[in-house]
Image (cartoon, rainbow, N blue to C red; front, side):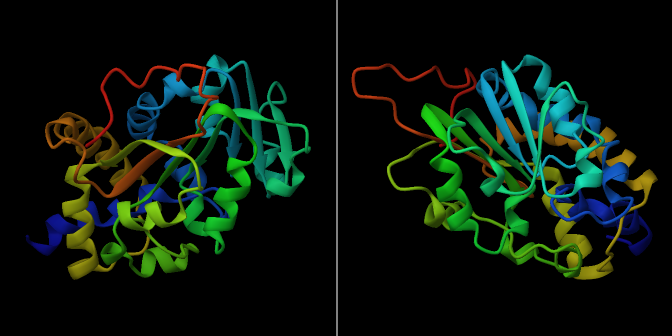
Length: 258
């Protein structure tokens, strides 16, 4: 692919930027990726209608999208400046999981491009799992494929990218895997091109708009055709089992990825 064309897509590793580590203007930059947020949140919205905890809520982009439909929404964010941007109508806690009151339990706990910033990810997941109600969902969206790990990942504090195998290794004992899906099948091609040829670190606002308007749109059409087996992001949903006499809540009508 010619270099001048690759440059248009050089940013494509960047949409997994996390609010867990504040990096200046990047959060505001990626706030414009509305199609991407609507796409991946549409796959979990049926699970976030109860009491929800979002870990690493950042400037509240996901909170604004999913929060109104939840019976309660707790935004957990270690950066006080970022936390202050989230409306006071939601419960806001500054800190990490240790800031959560012991009595607080949740129907869903969400990590949206956050877990890759946490060194002890298995410990984090195990602690989050203990805060789930029976039948509750632990939802993780993260950058996929360690072979795509680039200087960009390193520069923004990513410890790793994930695969189905590496997620299986940190899966909490006793939980069920409802769904593992790769997302953005077109984006993975562009990510690979950027890593091999351009090695660009930061996107521009124009590049984000192009990706969000065209690449995400095409991926959202192609991903289900490919049965969510290809993509630059990975989405996993784990569930805490209900008591044996109870019935589990219905899955997404689109069905789990096999």
